[in-house]
Image 1: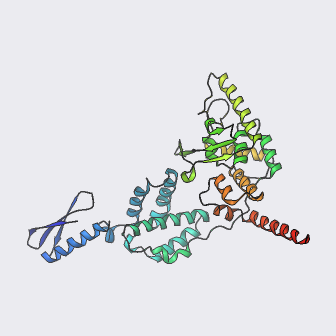
Image 2: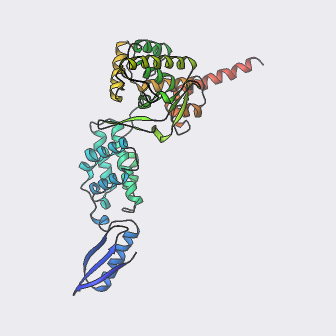
Image 3: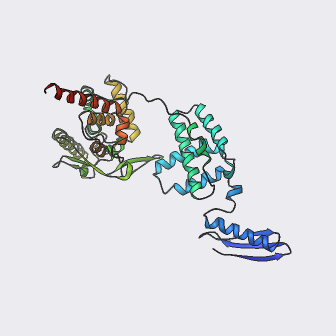
Length: 372
């Protein structure tokens, strides 16, 4: 990286240099020639380290957060970016935006953590906002805009997580009762699939008949529905990894029946069923419910059926809990559910189930000794 110095008048020098691939920058320096050369070297050093010349002294937290949002927009999922943008706009900029990034101190973050933790936000939301701030500051460190993350000194002072609550699950009888209540409605197919596969709600809504292999007894989870500001699109499943979920013969037969009845309903409207037709149609109009509509209808159905209050995600919890209860290897269960961590999340989330399995294993081992 090179630059040029040109004397404009006595005690005034023009410094010209190119910042990375951007346009040439021209600035005026007042002083002697040696000082001008030293200033040019400083500016070139900042460029070499991917730093804006004004960053160390003038860049505010608000300006950096705005720049950071533009950087990560192509790096993360659209829905995740919307969450980050809202956290920046609603919480971070009003509280910290006026502070210069280079002068952001642990005390500023400690005050912010205390204020957001004592506010009206849920503890989980407050922690998420603090996590987003930490990610943004770490990126500033990576780009050498600042040397260290001031939040490291007060990391343990972030809002505490909420106390874990008992996870709602449906037992066999409750699930059968729910299926019976859903049978006359368009909720039957998504509830059936959710309970026997553990698929996520938006994966179920994206399911098409081409994704169901009746001969092999498999469901191919290849897409997920995404709603962004009213527009519905498709993307790969969470973690970006398609998967195959096996289903029992009884469910294969039930899906065949659903497909046949759907084809007849569509034919009555003069529409042909194809492999791209959604499995979980809403009525006979060929459309599917938006995710929020399915969730709301599920909660209402549960209430009408007289079951304990729960949401659609409860079907996934119930499926995962049953996998753990019957002793399916954790890595196999994790792959079925679309987890990419090999089962660590399952072990943390369903510790109560694995504890029960451990006690059962101890009882069985003890029974071996009684026969000696």
